[in-house]
Image 1 (cartoon, one colour):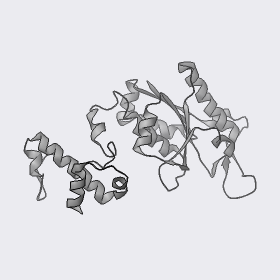
Image 2: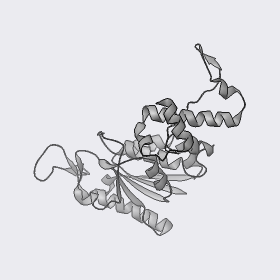
Image 3: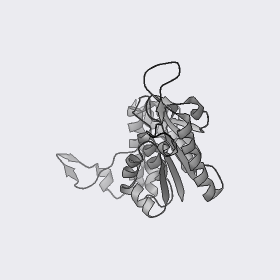
Image 4: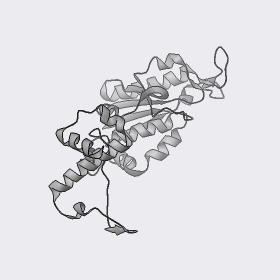
Length: 245
């Protein structure tokens, strides 16, 4: 079983999401385990304060290192009791490395992850120095790290054995082979004067597979040419690139 420890000020936000859909089903089937840990548990004042004003002045509040670090170390202790090892510590922050499918695949190989969700103006630097990896969803700022943690849970857990009903779909989807996914169609065969491509109704599986590869390449070339630029093109892809240029 793969385990996720989520350090968050809003455990109910994480729990609510993780009770639904395939994530909820995977939890109930013991394919994955998700445990939330709040830093407020490790405070000693009556207000259960987890933030304070920044040294040197400035706007906003900063998460205090003590409660946050104790929450992270609590996750370490829980995992150590189960596997005699420490979970990988990941902080969700716009300053981190941008999340890609390659990173998702790598993290999906891990047995346990601690996902640290910052809030307020930021996290004390002395905590940041004690994490293993910082991950960003992109060049924008959210109110906290919870959405990033949920994205990471869903992206990695769906690669775990038994979480998805059809394991083949993981291999065919966008970014799995460095390209965007091909178009999909289902019934009815005609919808608002637009028909399903005839090749998909032909029953010729070799031709369908070729059509899908070409559509995947063409869509990537139009929408994400940056993915093509760093790619070692096959003879087939070189011919498509010339045809589509």
